[in-house]
Image (tube, rainbow, N blue to C red; front, side):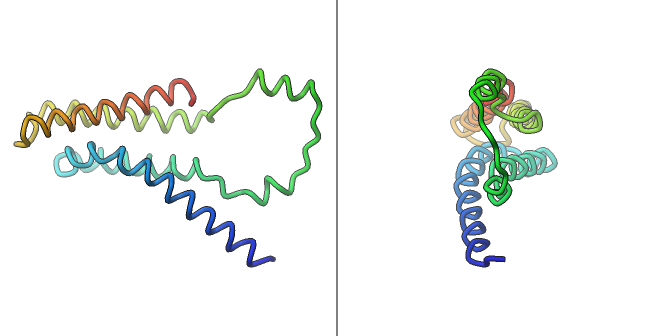
Length: 144
């Protein structure tokens, strides 16, 4: 076993996790700020779904990908292009679930009458949760 290759793969995986986390964590901020005290289970669910999506996004099986030998033919390539699925069903379900958590968080926060935050902050949090919800729901529904 080549330890240099294993260390390089681990470093690459850590860099990938860092870049994915840089996207997923800020998108959860409105939900967490608005609902962490009143709806901890909702926040925990959204965080776990984010971690699941992060794990699905990062491909650590580069050894398996490089070790398999695939033969190509134009007919097989054309059929694959016509039948391509951008994301897996599990990825889509995860995205729709995350969108539902953010949408529910926005609605629940608005129904709580904003927990004493100023109007601008409150509407910003609701708008942020709805925006993030729309992104996750549409990307899950469209498979992007």
